[in-house]
Length: 275
Image (cartoon, rainbow, N blue to C red; front, side, top):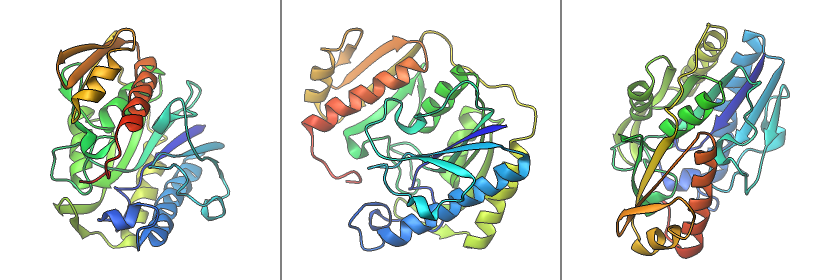
């Protein structure tokens, strides 16, 4: 059994503030330790389910948050950037399941550290007309490869977002949002035990991946009209207003193209991620 783990940071046990998840933040070093512990709980669960090959993709920010020596020895780590497939880099059709660890809810929700990929640079996103953040596109791109998302961990708002998108995915809430930078925390040992158990059972249950319709339509409303204008130089990208652009394409190729959109946006803006 081959298991793929995509790990973000905002939805990790105990973390609630930018100082917890940004390099240079006063609690970042502790945050990356907490990140490793949540991932290791998922790895233990995958091993218990019979996984013989486990890939972990560090999918947060600089994508160099996980220290290799802190990772469970059963897993191989994909670290650094750029990555052609971003948060799903290394995922292939021969994987049996995807585990999303430490995910967060989309921009505009009152979830812990909520945003959609680029802080306030992205105001809204829609996939085939449905509002999404990072969760929906990841599930749809994985499903298009024939690989189901089996488990997602994060705060309760991220879990609700996953359930609304695909109710068959097992979710584990490790904290409960009080506001965007505040939460009621589940005890760390309890949260990681829940992650391990969910992965151990979720990876062995017979599952059929959900797939997005083809071609899929991705629409993004940017904070900056300049970004939207520049993106129209990419073939197939069209505008619906000064700040909103969209494109159609088959997944997961459209997911990869969106990564190019973000690199264009990053070259034109310099905004803190959680303004």
